[in-house]
Structure formats: structure tokens, C-alpha cells
Image 1 (cartoon, rainbow, N blue to C red):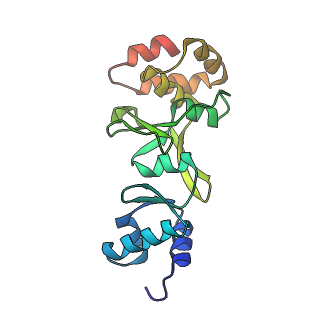
Image 2: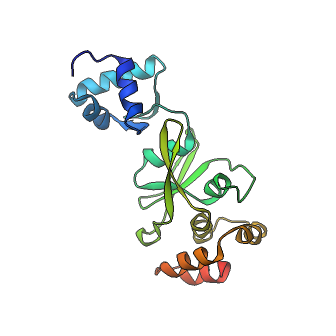
Length: 190
């Protein structure tokens, strides 16, 4: 690609809708070898046009919800973070929490935490446009199910949150799950 400069690379990255890139993804975007993309990534970070998240990963936005959904794939924002996003709770969690089918990970410096769930429980989320990018966020009912499944909620909050959910949708989501822990979900939520 002729006439590439850092501004053009940043604009191409943002225009693609994706905000978090690995070096390989950046190389694919600009049509250059990985070694050249590594140099571009370093220069973008040095100029303050991107932020280095981890070794080999950079972001063009400063939004924890977008970073969580694109740093580890597949994943989506869930638990108390999704409940806050939808207005079911008002307390802001210390970290943006999400779920993934991969191993649990905690990136405290980035402000994001991933919890592992079984693939059979990986549903009930939507893509939202956010901060020149996108984020996958669980709907309120699914976030509540993930929260109970992982054993995270304070008991006093559950009744209040259940009152704000669509009970039919909640029941449908619980019945859809066929794995270990279904009885726990039924006991807490239905």
C-alpha cells in the first residue's frame, strides 16, 4: 500500500470498526509483513495514537468495554458490568468483567477480568456501537445468569435485579442451559 503514514493507518483501523489489534491483524490491515507492522505499532504507541495493551496488542480507543470484547475472543461483557450497562444496578464494579470460553484471565492494569464459562452457556449477548468501535454486551437476563452461575452476586442484590428483568426471557435462558449448575440457576432465579 503506497503512501502509508501513521495517521492513515490509525484512520484505516478506526474505519474498520475494530479498535483492538494484534500485530498480525495490523499487518493484514495495512497489507505489509508482520515485521513492518511491528514497527508501525511501535511508532503509533510512541506518538500517542494508540495504546499498548499487552505485548503484541494495541488499542485505538480508551474504553474498557470495547477492549474487553476485542482483546480476548470470543468474549462479551457480563456480570455486574453488563447489569450496570443496562441500568439494572447502580454500583460501579472495580473492573469490567466479562466471560469467555477460554481460560479465566485477570488484567488489572487494563481494568478487565475474564471468567471462563462452558460453551453451552455462551449466548445472550448483542453487539453495541461504542467509542469508535464495538462491544459485545450480555443482555440483563443473561448477565444475571452468568453472575449466579459463577457464584458472584450478593444475595441482597438478586431480588432487586430479578424484579427488573423480563421473567419470560430469564426462564427461557435458564431452560436453554443443559450443563452442570442448571439446578443452582433454577433455585436462585426461577
